[in-house]
Image (cartoon, rainbow, N blue to C red; front, top):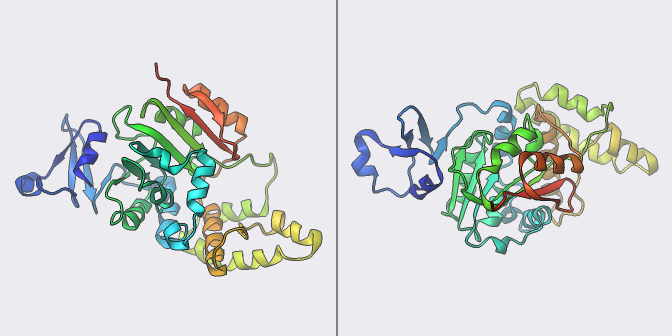
Length: 325
């Protein structure tokens, strides 16, 4: 943890015990603890990351996921702008518009979007409830010392109010127990006029259970290692069925053997297959997966107190601001 990260945290000080004088000269803190000003809370710092949660709860499968697929979605790995283009499409912003900004990535995973934004932000924070945050730090810290990391629950964040110019969450909040609770808890961490941008899955078919829903129901309850083995066998077979002629191929693609496919990505076939396996595992391994109508998300933003709420023209991406008043 970089010492200057403390300026974003509320009511916490560094505590080194008997080694305080020696370690106070360090810029990055590998191991130690934060202690609240009332001395009632002690937060462990390990591997340079403050740990505000001791358990990964419902996010355990994501921690496993990003420890397996550490670099799959990084632009530096694919030698493309896939992640950069995705971020700009969802947020309707250019990355170079973030100069001098303090930005928070909720559910940073392996750090695909952190890598895109880090060259431009003044300060950038990657938060994840799972140990994926360790993967993110491993991928970025040697390149971007302005990026900070912590393991915490997005519904109970330790930041000072009004810390961020921008908070974004891409592909995360549909995996949380309550979108409404998340939106309400995030508002106070924006600066006046600051913006929250989220992207979540679109609506599910009511009263319709698809075969991959049954797969998820079974495999999200198993060891993630078993789910990954299944997914690695399932996805290549599923993708082949999508190439069957006429309506038969469409039947397999959209109903019988769904699997994500990215023929538009300018990457080698083996990378494309790895990306498909990653996203299929993401679906099969999670216990919580919800879908939302855009109009409902917009209404939830408004009820939570955001202003200037709007669609970002990418289903389902919505943004809203904290009032300047």
